[in-house]
Amino acid sequence: MALVQSHLSPNRPRERRAIALLGRLSPGALAGLVVFLVLCVPLIAPTWLAPYDPTAVSPNEIFQPPSFHHWLGTDQFGRDMLSRLISGTHVSMSLGVVSVSLSVLISLPLGIASGYYRGALDSVLMRLMDVVMAFPGILLALIIISILGPGLANAMIAVGIGEAPAYTRVVRSAALGVREQSYIEAARAIGAHDTRILWRYVLPNIIQPLIVISSVGFAVAIVIGSSLGFLGLGAQPPTAEWGTMVSEGRTYLRSQWWISAFPGATIGVSVLALNILGDALRDVLDPRLRRSV
Image 1 (cartoon, rainbow, N blue to C red):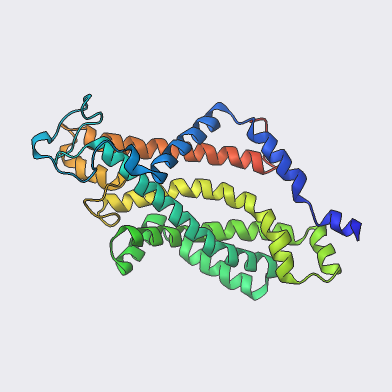
Image 2 (cartoon, rainbow, N blue to C red):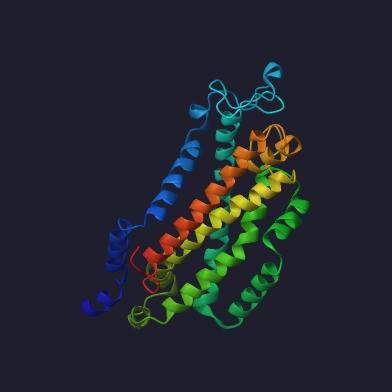
Protein backbone atom coordinates (compact mmCIF):
# COMPACT_ATOMS: atom_id res chain seq x y z
CA MET A 1 0.00 0.00 0.00
CA ALA A 2 2.82 2.40 0.80
CA LEU A 3 4.39 1.55 -2.57
CA VAL A 4 1.14 2.40 -4.33
CA GLN A 5 0.85 5.69 -2.46
CA SER A 6 4.40 6.60 -3.47
CA HIS A 7 3.37 6.20 -7.10
CA LEU A 8 0.22 8.23 -6.54
CA SER A 9 2.09 11.36 -5.43
CA PRO A 10 4.32 12.31 -8.38
CA ASN A 11 3.80 16.05 -8.23
CA ARG A 12 5.51 17.34 -5.11
CA PRO A 13 9.15 17.05 -6.28
CA ARG A 14 8.19 18.61 -9.60
CA GLU A 15 6.45 21.51 -7.89
CA ARG A 16 9.46 22.13 -5.66
CA ARG A 17 11.73 22.23 -8.70
CA ALA A 18 9.36 24.65 -10.46
CA ILE A 19 9.36 26.99 -7.47
CA ALA A 20 13.16 26.89 -7.32
CA LEU A 21 13.42 27.71 -11.03
CA LEU A 22 11.13 30.71 -10.64
CA GLY A 23 14.01 32.45 -8.93
CA ARG A 24 16.18 31.88 -12.00
CA LEU A 25 14.04 33.69 -14.56
CA SER A 26 15.86 35.67 -17.23
CA PRO A 27 15.84 39.48 -17.07
CA GLY A 28 13.35 39.54 -19.94
CA ALA A 29 11.02 37.17 -18.11
CA LEU A 30 11.32 39.21 -14.93
CA ALA A 31 10.51 42.35 -16.92
CA GLY A 32 7.45 40.61 -18.36
CA LEU A 33 6.36 39.62 -14.87
CA VAL A 34 6.81 43.19 -13.61
CA VAL A 35 4.77 44.59 -16.51
CA PHE A 36 2.02 42.06 -15.83
CA LEU A 37 1.93 42.96 -12.13
CA VAL A 38 1.81 46.67 -13.00
CA LEU A 39 -1.14 46.02 -15.32
CA CYS A 40 -2.90 44.16 -12.51
CA VAL A 41 -2.85 47.25 -10.27
CA PRO A 42 -5.49 49.17 -12.32
CA LEU A 43 -7.44 45.93 -12.53
CA ILE A 44 -7.83 45.98 -8.76
CA ALA A 45 -8.18 49.71 -8.03
CA PRO A 46 -8.63 51.88 -11.17
CA THR A 47 -10.47 54.76 -9.48
CA TRP A 48 -7.73 55.21 -6.89
CA LEU A 49 -5.05 55.73 -9.54
CA ALA A 50 -6.84 57.90 -12.10
CA PRO A 51 -6.19 61.61 -11.44
CA TYR A 52 -9.42 62.64 -13.22
CA ASP A 53 -12.77 61.18 -14.11
CA PRO A 54 -12.03 59.21 -17.33
CA THR A 55 -15.43 60.08 -18.82
CA ALA A 56 -15.58 63.75 -17.72
CA VAL A 57 -15.79 66.11 -20.71
CA SER A 58 -13.91 69.42 -20.60
CA PRO A 59 -14.54 71.56 -23.72
CA ASN A 60 -11.93 74.12 -22.66
CA GLU A 61 -9.13 71.51 -22.63
CA ILE A 62 -9.60 69.61 -25.87
CA PHE A 63 -6.48 68.38 -27.70
CA GLN A 64 -4.08 69.41 -24.95
CA PRO A 65 -0.62 67.89 -25.59
CA PRO A 66 1.17 66.01 -22.79
CA SER A 67 2.06 68.38 -19.98
CA PHE A 68 2.49 68.50 -16.21
CA HIS A 69 -1.25 69.15 -15.91
CA HIS A 70 -2.23 66.26 -18.18
CA TRP A 71 0.69 63.86 -18.37
CA LEU A 72 -0.58 62.07 -21.49
CA GLY A 73 -2.59 64.96 -22.90
CA THR A 74 -6.33 65.16 -23.55
CA ASP A 75 -8.56 63.88 -26.34
CA GLN A 76 -11.13 65.51 -28.62
CA PHE A 77 -13.54 65.88 -25.71
CA GLY A 78 -11.00 67.23 -23.24
CA ARG A 79 -10.85 63.96 -21.30
CA ASP A 80 -7.61 63.19 -19.51
CA MET A 81 -5.75 60.49 -21.45
CA LEU A 82 -3.86 59.13 -18.43
CA SER A 83 -7.13 58.59 -16.56
CA ARG A 84 -8.67 56.93 -19.61
CA LEU A 85 -5.60 54.75 -20.10
CA ILE A 86 -5.80 53.57 -16.48
CA SER A 87 -9.52 52.93 -16.83
CA GLY A 88 -8.89 51.21 -20.17
CA THR A 89 -6.30 48.97 -18.52
CA HIS A 90 -8.94 47.87 -16.04
CA VAL A 91 -11.39 47.10 -18.86
CA SER A 92 -8.89 45.34 -21.13
CA MET A 93 -7.37 43.28 -18.32
CA SER A 94 -10.86 42.35 -17.11
CA LEU A 95 -11.67 41.21 -20.64
CA GLY A 96 -8.55 39.06 -20.64
CA VAL A 97 -9.28 37.55 -17.23
CA VAL A 98 -12.92 36.75 -17.99
CA SER A 99 -12.30 35.39 -21.50
CA VAL A 100 -9.36 33.20 -20.40
CA SER A 101 -11.38 31.93 -17.43
CA LEU A 102 -14.26 31.08 -19.78
CA SER A 103 -11.88 29.26 -22.13
CA VAL A 104 -10.47 27.25 -19.20
CA LEU A 105 -13.95 26.36 -17.91
CA ILE A 106 -14.95 25.12 -21.37
CA SER A 107 -11.72 23.30 -22.16
CA LEU A 108 -11.14 21.47 -18.87
CA PRO A 109 -14.12 19.07 -19.00
CA LEU A 110 -13.95 18.65 -22.79
CA GLY A 111 -10.19 18.11 -22.91
CA ILE A 112 -10.07 15.76 -19.93
CA ALA A 113 -13.00 13.69 -21.19
CA SER A 114 -11.50 13.49 -24.67
CA GLY A 115 -7.99 12.57 -23.54
CA TYR A 116 -8.87 10.23 -20.71
CA TYR A 117 -11.77 8.26 -22.20
CA ARG A 118 -10.68 8.37 -25.87
CA GLY A 119 -12.88 6.38 -28.29
CA ALA A 120 -15.86 7.86 -30.09
CA LEU A 121 -16.13 10.74 -27.60
CA ASP A 122 -12.59 11.81 -28.43
CA SER A 123 -13.24 11.66 -32.17
CA VAL A 124 -16.43 13.71 -31.99
CA LEU A 125 -14.99 16.38 -29.69
CA MET A 126 -11.76 16.78 -31.66
CA ARG A 127 -13.56 17.06 -34.99
CA LEU A 128 -15.77 19.72 -33.44
CA MET A 129 -12.67 21.55 -32.24
CA ASP A 130 -11.18 21.26 -35.74
CA VAL A 131 -14.25 22.92 -37.23
CA VAL A 132 -14.09 25.81 -34.75
CA MET A 133 -10.32 26.24 -35.20
CA ALA A 134 -10.77 26.45 -38.97
CA PHE A 135 -11.97 30.02 -38.41
CA PRO A 136 -9.37 32.69 -37.54
CA GLY A 137 -9.81 33.96 -33.98
CA ILE A 138 -10.94 37.46 -34.92
CA LEU A 139 -13.36 36.12 -37.56
CA LEU A 140 -14.92 33.70 -35.11
CA ALA A 141 -15.25 36.50 -32.56
CA LEU A 142 -16.97 38.67 -35.18
CA ILE A 143 -19.42 35.85 -35.96
CA ILE A 144 -20.28 35.42 -32.29
CA ILE A 145 -20.59 39.18 -31.78
CA SER A 146 -22.92 39.41 -34.78
CA ILE A 147 -25.17 36.90 -33.03
CA LEU A 148 -24.96 38.28 -29.50
CA GLY A 149 -24.65 41.97 -30.40
CA PRO A 150 -21.89 44.49 -29.59
CA GLY A 151 -20.82 45.19 -26.04
CA LEU A 152 -18.07 44.44 -23.55
CA ALA A 153 -19.76 41.42 -21.97
CA ASN A 154 -20.48 39.87 -25.36
CA ALA A 155 -16.90 40.55 -26.44
CA MET A 156 -15.66 38.61 -23.40
CA ILE A 157 -17.92 35.69 -24.32
CA ALA A 158 -16.86 35.80 -27.97
CA VAL A 159 -13.15 35.80 -27.15
CA GLY A 160 -13.56 33.07 -24.53
CA ILE A 161 -15.45 30.75 -26.88
CA GLY A 162 -13.09 31.49 -29.75
CA GLU A 163 -10.00 30.54 -27.77
CA ALA A 164 -11.50 27.45 -26.07
CA PRO A 165 -10.56 24.92 -28.83
CA ALA A 166 -6.83 25.66 -28.47
CA TYR A 167 -7.07 25.19 -24.70
CA THR A 168 -9.05 21.98 -25.20
CA ARG A 169 -6.34 20.49 -27.40
CA VAL A 170 -3.65 21.29 -24.82
CA VAL A 171 -5.71 19.74 -22.01
CA ARG A 172 -6.42 16.66 -24.14
CA SER A 173 -2.74 16.22 -24.95
CA ALA A 174 -1.79 16.47 -21.28
CA ALA A 175 -4.56 14.05 -20.26
CA LEU A 176 -3.41 11.56 -22.89
CA GLY A 177 0.08 11.55 -21.40
CA VAL A 178 -1.12 11.27 -17.82
CA ARG A 179 -3.54 8.38 -18.39
CA GLU A 180 -0.65 6.11 -19.43
CA GLN A 181 1.43 6.73 -16.32
CA SER A 182 2.11 3.94 -13.85
CA TYR A 183 0.48 5.74 -10.91
CA ILE A 184 -2.80 5.87 -12.87
CA GLU A 185 -2.58 2.11 -13.38
CA ALA A 186 -1.83 1.71 -9.67
CA ALA A 187 -4.88 3.77 -8.76
CA ARG A 188 -7.07 1.63 -11.00
CA ALA A 189 -5.56 -1.53 -9.49
CA ILE A 190 -6.64 -0.56 -5.97
CA GLY A 191 -10.15 0.19 -7.20
CA ALA A 192 -10.10 3.99 -7.40
CA HIS A 193 -13.11 5.42 -9.21
CA ASP A 194 -12.62 7.48 -12.37
CA THR A 195 -13.90 10.58 -10.59
CA ARG A 196 -11.22 10.25 -7.91
CA ILE A 197 -8.50 9.53 -10.48
CA LEU A 198 -9.47 12.55 -12.58
CA TRP A 199 -9.72 14.90 -9.61
CA ARG A 200 -6.66 13.80 -7.65
CA TYR A 201 -4.18 12.58 -10.25
CA VAL A 202 -5.12 13.79 -13.75
CA LEU A 203 -6.19 17.37 -13.01
CA PRO A 204 -3.04 18.36 -11.02
CA ASN A 205 -0.84 17.13 -13.87
CA ILE A 206 -2.56 19.21 -16.56
CA ILE A 207 -2.50 22.46 -14.59
CA GLN A 208 1.07 23.31 -15.63
CA PRO A 209 0.54 23.28 -19.42
CA LEU A 210 -2.79 25.02 -18.87
CA ILE A 211 -1.03 27.85 -17.01
CA VAL A 212 1.42 28.25 -19.88
CA ILE A 213 -1.21 28.45 -22.61
CA SER A 214 -3.34 30.72 -20.42
CA SER A 215 -0.51 33.26 -20.18
CA VAL A 216 -0.13 33.30 -23.95
CA GLY A 217 -3.90 33.16 -24.42
CA PHE A 218 -4.22 36.21 -22.18
CA ALA A 219 -2.20 38.19 -24.73
CA VAL A 220 -4.31 36.82 -27.59
CA ALA A 221 -7.48 37.77 -25.73
CA ILE A 222 -6.23 41.33 -25.28
CA VAL A 223 -5.41 41.62 -29.00
CA ILE A 224 -8.77 40.23 -30.15
CA GLY A 225 -10.67 42.26 -27.55
CA SER A 226 -8.85 45.42 -28.61
CA SER A 227 -9.59 44.62 -32.26
CA LEU A 228 -13.28 44.29 -31.47
CA GLY A 229 -13.13 47.60 -29.59
CA PHE A 230 -11.37 49.23 -32.55
CA LEU A 231 -14.16 48.04 -34.84
CA GLY A 232 -16.80 49.38 -32.46
CA LEU A 233 -18.04 45.93 -31.44
CA GLY A 234 -16.47 45.70 -27.99
CA ALA A 235 -16.68 48.21 -25.17
CA GLN A 236 -19.01 51.05 -26.16
CA PRO A 237 -18.34 54.80 -25.64
CA PRO A 238 -17.81 56.49 -23.29
CA THR A 239 -16.18 53.42 -21.70
CA ALA A 240 -12.41 53.63 -21.99
CA GLU A 241 -10.84 50.56 -23.60
CA TRP A 242 -7.51 50.30 -25.41
CA GLY A 243 -8.89 49.36 -28.83
CA THR A 244 -11.69 51.91 -28.60
CA MET A 245 -9.20 54.63 -27.63
CA VAL A 246 -6.99 53.83 -30.62
CA SER A 247 -10.03 54.00 -32.89
CA GLU A 248 -11.15 57.34 -31.45
CA GLY A 249 -7.75 58.90 -32.09
CA ARG A 250 -7.07 57.59 -35.60
CA THR A 251 -8.78 60.61 -37.20
CA TYR A 252 -6.35 62.93 -35.42
CA LEU A 253 -3.25 60.78 -35.77
CA ARG A 254 -1.22 63.33 -37.76
CA SER A 255 -1.71 66.25 -35.37
CA GLN A 256 -2.87 64.85 -32.02
CA TRP A 257 -0.79 61.66 -32.09
CA TRP A 258 -0.96 61.00 -28.36
CA ILE A 259 -4.66 60.02 -28.45
CA SER A 260 -3.88 56.77 -30.31
CA ALA A 261 -0.17 56.40 -29.59
CA PHE A 262 -0.32 55.77 -25.86
CA PRO A 263 -3.09 53.11 -25.84
CA GLY A 264 -1.53 51.50 -28.93
CA ALA A 265 1.86 51.36 -27.24
CA THR A 266 0.25 49.90 -24.12
CA ILE A 267 -1.29 47.10 -26.18
CA GLY A 268 2.09 46.31 -27.77
CA VAL A 269 4.03 46.34 -24.51
CA SER A 270 1.40 44.26 -22.71
CA VAL A 271 1.26 41.58 -25.41
CA LEU A 272 5.07 41.41 -25.64
CA ALA A 273 5.41 41.10 -21.86
CA LEU A 274 2.77 38.37 -21.64
CA ASN A 275 4.35 36.38 -24.47
CA ILE A 276 7.81 36.58 -22.87
CA LEU A 277 6.32 35.58 -19.52
CA GLY A 278 4.51 32.67 -21.17
CA ASP A 279 7.74 31.39 -22.74
CA ALA A 280 9.49 31.62 -19.38
CA LEU A 281 6.69 29.72 -17.64
CA ARG A 282 6.92 27.02 -20.30
CA ASP A 283 10.65 26.63 -19.64
CA VAL A 284 10.12 26.52 -15.89
CA LEU A 285 7.14 24.19 -15.78
CA ASP A 286 7.90 21.76 -18.62
CA PRO A 287 10.89 19.55 -17.76
CA ARG A 288 11.25 18.49 -21.42
CA LEU A 289 11.86 22.09 -22.48
CA ARG A 290 13.63 23.25 -19.34
CA ARG A 291 16.88 25.03 -19.86
CA SER A 292 18.93 27.52 -17.91
CA VAL A 293 16.60 30.53 -17.69
